[in-house]
Length: 93
View 1 (cartoon, helix red, strand yellow):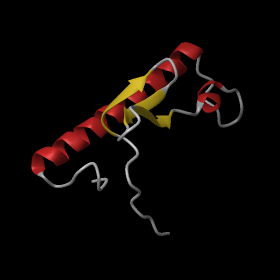
View 2 (tube, rainbow, N blue to C red):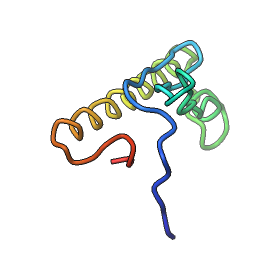
View 3 (cartoon, one colour):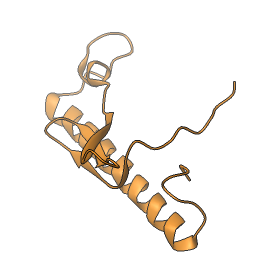
View 4 (tube, one colour):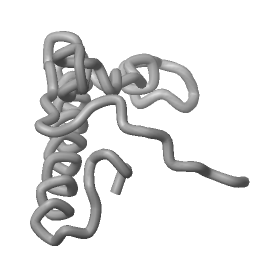
């Protein structure tokens, strides 16, 4: 399987929106743009054979922690890359 780097649609700083469970970054010309939407609600709260069956509050905690972690890692990565001069947001480093 071959992967190619796609141009970034958004740059740091990234932020997590708990109300919509989405991750946002700064668009080049259009202001804030949505980068990702956290999914998996059915797996977290469902009752099927592979579902976790979590209470709603616990499922929200999982999704919020995941969103905050992703944003923290994105922001740290781009800050470190800029400080080290090893990559830029434009090349997806």
